[in-house]
Length: 94
Image (cartoon, rainbow, N blue to C red; front, side, top):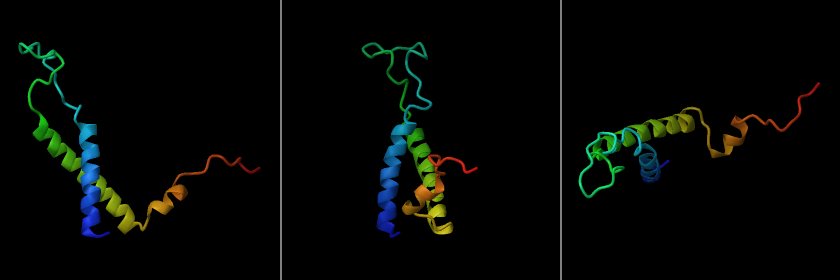
């Protein structure tokens, strides 16, 4: 895999993981019982983007490390996915 492909994969994975991680550790103003006048009670308590970006980067690096290990270390690819998952549609032989 070239470095350009790796950067593209990192970029796409990073954004997907970011949207998956954003709701975690989010505290609303209603939970802190300190609602600012003019805002809804479900608004976030304060900025938490730095923590979300750091967590996203760490999780993305771990996922890409697993991907790299499976493709380079074990020699698996996209074509091997059907062979990894067992086929449950066949009936057991007697």
